[in-house]
Image 1 (cartoon, rainbow, N blue to C red):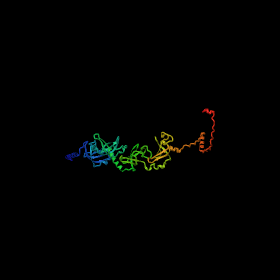
Image 2: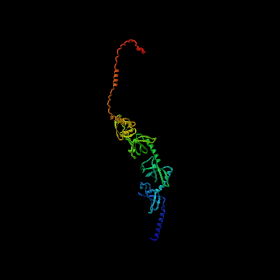
Image 3: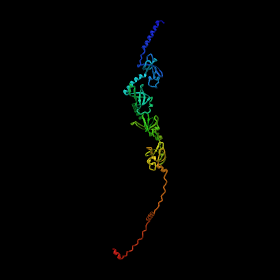
Image 4: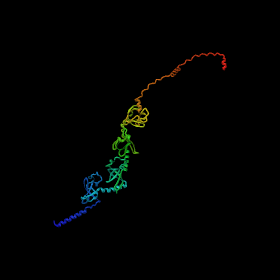
Length: 419
């Protein structure tokens, strides 16, 4: 090849390189540019930026969702706007971020939602001290535990992975501090569900629910967005000291509605099965006047409660415990003691049975008969008795005899002197 040809080829290559350089975009750190996705792997997304090197977006710079699958959320041919982190990472690669551009746009949307008090969708991603973390428009927002619901929630773990609408209650762009909550939204949603449920629910209806909270006086059950209360007395036909002895948070249960009050927003439930009510046929089991066995369940100042069978307790009033006067039931009885009692009365309306240990003891162990006393009669009593018998007999009247006439006697000289 001649020297002239070589020079011509060199000039053409130089001109092509110059034209190529002029056709390529210029990049600088911090610039925001558009690109086309050309390849997606499990860890990164490759983007054609119209530059001599393609842009590389790592998964962490593409999305905040660690559970996301890149091949599902990014497709070749998609147009994306990216932020240039470094034009050259030392190996000739351009490092870019989609998340930073999204965050800038989303921060403006979050700020607008904060100012206008509008709700935005988000997803609970993590649990932290004092609350939870939500991903709202790709931004990390703190949700206090008190703001996750309109009621107290003990199990925050159950919210993880769920999507809700949130209000932005604090926003500081300079500190990148975002606090979100859904307490007001949850209360509004609960009111809507409450109206819907109260419109359908009826006394006697069987409902399914989940135990959401336990307190000393009962158990709260979530029955589709609102809570019904099972009072401790309605947990079982047996005596239950506290609901936690029988139920646990998260238990799935089937209960019966016994009361519905839409005005107060209250629903009362029971776990008692009517068919297995131990008070059914109680008059036939324990007729008044019969003596039955029972076990002392607990003592009170006024008497002792005795279990006749599971779910059936009777009361021995303190006056019916013993034939002697006692100040406290524990002078005669102890919990767990088996006793024999007499059924005094049954109040079916209030499920009450009155019992007596004192009367049962008398019937079962009657006192020995006392011997008849022999009464010694005194002489005076004999005389009085005889006189009475004589007085009762008819008395024969004596015949009337004429009185003799008085003979006048001459007064003696002594009688005269006395006068």
